[in-house]
Structure formats: C-alpha cells, structure tokens
Length: 568
Ligand SMILES: CC(=O)SCCNC(=O)CCNC(=O)[C@H](O)C(C)(C)COP(=O)(O)OP(=O)(O)OC[C@H]1O[C@@H](n2cnc3c(N)ncnc32)[C@H](O)[C@@H]1OP(=O)(O)O
Ligand SMILES: O=CC(=O)O
Ligand SMILES: [Mg+2]
Image 1: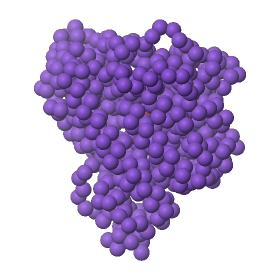
Image 2 (image 1 turned 135 degrees about the horizontal axis):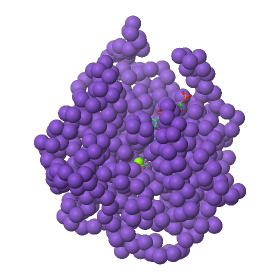
Image 3 (image 1 turned 90 degrees about the vertical axis):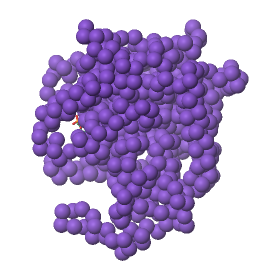
Image 4 (image 1 turned 90 degrees about the horizontal axis):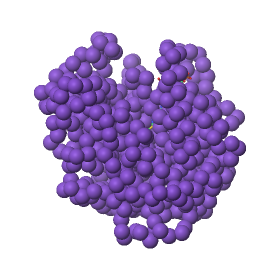
C-alpha cells in the first residue's frame, strides 16, 4: 500500500500508493505525497468537511476575487479608494461586537511564527500571551510544510507536542503555562494545488482552516479557549464581502461541530489599503466572531503601492523610510484603534522588523531600542497589544506595554478616542522621503534572497538583522516595479540617476555576485538563487504588475505524486 523510503531518505512512491493511500470522499483527489502521518490529518471526514466548505463557498470566493480586480481597474483608471457611501449607516450606527472571551482578554504581546515543530513549542513557551501560528506570510506553503504544520498544531492543542533536536541532544516540550493559540490560514487568493475538489485546486485557506478546525475544535475549547475557540487571524482581505464569507464559514463550522454561535473568534488584519476604508464594515460582518483588528503594516505598504500602481504621483521613497511615522501609516493605525474600541474589541499593533543581533551587543541594543520606541508609540496611541517576531524581544515589549497599561488586560474601555476625524486624504497621503541607489540594491538583494529561501521551503528568514517574510519581500518587489515603470530619478544620493531596465539589469547582476560572496560559493550553487533571481526580475520588469509574488513562485514548489508536470 505505501511507498518506500530510498537509501537517501527520500520517498519513492508508486502510482498505486498515491492513488490508494488516502481514503478520499467522492470528488476529492489528493496529489501530495502520502505518509501514514499525513493520513491522520487527511481523514475521510476531515476532507469531507473541507469539500463541503469549498463547494458552498467557491463561487462567492471567485466573485470576491473578481471584485478585487474590478476595483483595481478603477484605481488604475485614476479613482482613489474611499469610504463607501452605501455603508455609511454601519459606520455611523451604534453597535458593538460580541464581548471578548476571558481567555484572550489580555493580548499584550503576541509572538508569531511558522508552524514548524520546534518553533511552535518555543513560541507557546515564550511568555507571550498569544502565539499566532502562521500558514501565511511566514510559511512557504509546500505540501510538507502544510501537512507537518497541521500535525504540529494538533499535537500542540492536545498538549502532547515534543521535539528532539538530535544535533544538540535537546528535548523540547510544553511548559505548564503556554500562550493561547491563534492560527492564520492563507489568504483567499492562494490555491492548494495538492488537493483537487471536483477537478479544481482547493482554496488554500479553506484547507488550512478546515483541517485545523476539524481536528482541534474539541480539544482547543477544553485546553486553550475556556469554552471558546478555536481562534484565528484572517489575512489580506480587501472588502467586507470577504469578511462576510468568513462569517458564513464560521457558522457552517460551528454547525458541523454542534457548538454555540460565536465560539470561534478571529482577528482580522487590516493590511490592504482598500480595507482601511472598510474597518467598521468588516467588524460588522464578523460581529459575533470578532476579537479585533490588527495593523498588518508590511502588507499594508505593499498594498499602497499595488493600489496606486497606475498613479505616478504616489511613488514610495526607500523602503526603510516608510515607517509608522509616515502620515498615512499613523492615520491608519489611529483609525484602527478608534474603530476597534468603539466596537468593543482589541486594536492590535503590528510587527517591528528588528530581531536580536547575537554577535554585536551594541547593534543589538540599538535594535532593541528601535523596537521599544515602536511599541511605546503603539501603547500610547491606544493599541491593546502587539506582535513580536522573536522570543528574545518579548521581555522588552512586555515591559513597555505593562509599564504603560498597568494591571488592566487591555485598553478597550480606557482608551476611547474621539478626537479629530481621520479623512480619506489622511489615509492615502503620499509618503515622504527620498529614493536612493542603495534602496534599489537592498530591495533587489533582499527580494532575491527571500524568494530563494521560500523556494526551498522557508517562509521567514533573518536578513541583514531584520525579519523578512512574504509581506516584506512584496514591498521590495513592487517598489522596484514602480520605480522601473515610472523611470524614477534616484534623488537621495545626489546622482540623479533614472531607474531603467538597463540599470536594473546591472543591479541584479551585481547583487547576485554580492549574494554569492555573502552566502559562499557552495551554498549559492546548491541553493535556488538563480531561479529566485529569474522570478524576481521577471516580476519587477513585468508590463502589468503581478498580484502576488507567491502566486507565480507557487508553481515551483508544487510537487505532485506521482510526479507529473503541473502548472496552475
Ligand atoms: C509581516 C508579517 O506577517 S509578520 C508575521 C510573520 N513573520 C513571522 O512570524 C516571523 C517569525 N520569526 C521568525 O521566523 C524568526 O525569528 C526569524 C526567521 C526572523 C529569525 O530566525 P533565527 O535567526 O533562526 O532565530 P534565532 O537563531 O535567533 O533563534 C533562536 C531561538 O529562538 C527560536 N525562535 C526564533 N524566532 C521564533 C519565533 N518567532 N517563534 C518561536 N521560536 C522562535 C528559534 O527556534 C531558536 O530556538 P532554539 O534556541 O531552541 O534553537
Ligand atoms: O501580516 C502582517 C503584515 O504586516 O503584513
Ligand atoms: Mg501580512
């Protein structure tokens, strides 16, 4: 029945094995590798639940994605995003979301990370209040990562997860006290090419959500949620119609499980520019399920460029200059805080990109100071909690939040701000700063190195002492694209050079040489740097901006069994 392991440890499946390995319901085809462990996740009942979700919601998802395209066509023709007059009654109405479950009233520090086994244990033990386990920005969605991620989360929720680091002979287990688990499925746009339902790839987020929910809702409500849950983070939405689909997915899941309405809770990331004009509407659609909004600042910057791809008057300065001090970023964070507190839910802060620098105490202290400053701004502005990328940052971030909030679990009641109105113009105001050759080079180097990591199964990496993931890499890509499209002048270094294809071609060559030097010839040869450079360069120079870097790159990580060439 099963395939065999070859001498080098790789799996050699037979056609019969893959066809027969998983016991699948009618209409479902599993094209990913078979293992006995994965079969514990891909049970017939769990797959049936995923297929039910897919069949019920696929047309609405397709429609929502079409609406995104239609809105983009309008922005490309010169329109600006704004508040929708048709939903003024929601923005002006007096309503609140369901009250916050006691288990997650205090979310001062949330650690995030991919669903990798050791990291899941470390994150749950980290001292953070919440761990957001990520199938999204921080995870490269290979079949192996996704299936192992599901197994890891199942063991985590059951409290049995352990990991033996053989090289260091160290065993990892859960502490008595652990962070509360939130899970972030992929965005609506990403397919899951290893699971076909009625002849089409499944929707990635329904696979992530469906499998996790099906296997964990019981244990979660007992062990983690004190009767509530499971808890989720929902990424990259652009409109409240997408939140409404999640609302219906949650209703259906609760019905299947036979648990009360409002058991599931979710925090929506406001990380696209169009969604900034829909905060009330998104909360309203999810009012029985919401535990807040989060400032997904990195995707938000990416979305600003994407939304304004046709607007030559809204070009970004160097990536390092687009921080939370920019007027449009501060306005978005302020609006998010006001909206959440008015509706009775958490207003979560975002991710500072700095991570600990092990071998340089001075640089480490400087990085920590930047994180502290960022978090101080957030807590003073009214955020109820925030994200940490690394366990080493948690004590400093916790101190900032505790020192400024005292013993209260959140500021939902105490920080109600009704000061100056935030206007459409505040939310789209042009970022200020300069563009430099160093900015172009850094975007290129970071973009290529990130894609190379992603293609080999790693979705978050430390690069030049910063955390890089799919969202930060997107900024590098679209900023290069924008500068190339408009042939901008690099006005920050006194050279006045214009960004052309020729210049960019030279930059790519030189940065590839630098990467080779940095990682070493052996690693460079063995790695995916050339493939990454090809993907990144094509996207930066494309006549029409690709919607997502990872959609194109996904084709490279799809591995069908038995092996067939597969392009979506
Ligand atoms: C824009 C957004 O969406 S932000 C959210 C998505 N991004 C993320 O979640 C990024 C999460 N962070 C990470 O992936 C990592 O911290 C990185 C890649 C940035 C840095 O990783 P590394 O350089 O390998 O970290 P480092 O070597 O310092 O790790 C030290 C220890 O901390 C652990 N660790 C580091 N980051 C995390 C984390 N986020 N969660 C749990 N454990 C972690 C490591 O597993 C390691 O454990 P060990 O000592 O038991 O072996
Ligand atoms: O998901 C978070 C972001 O900043 O993007
Ligand atoms: Mg994001």
